[in-house]
Image (cartoon, rainbow, N blue to C red):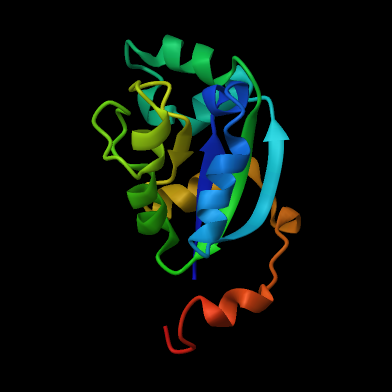
Length: 152
């Protein structure tokens, strides 16, 4: 099992797409093991986007991510990081394939609805920014045995 961080960004919140996007993750068989509605602060933005903080586009990124609440999720599942990234589609919504979250709901590079960790290392770092260990609620849904074979 692998964990990944998902942020349903301010545009997702403002457009009231949270439920539709959450249902896609649940329908795929991913488990929500932590979730909260938060307002990202400039300080948290700088920590989260540390690799971009010195780039010319960072001020607009910070302005966007702090503009409205976000839903932070920890999802768990087999190969969760790559599965989620495939579900999201290309970063630019105009280039994302139909059937992906961004392909179906986004037409922007920056306002692309969802952030997802891109590697196990970034997932661990990012999850640590948004959740403490005591905020995880891990359980095995009864239907899980019908989602994949026991040996997968």
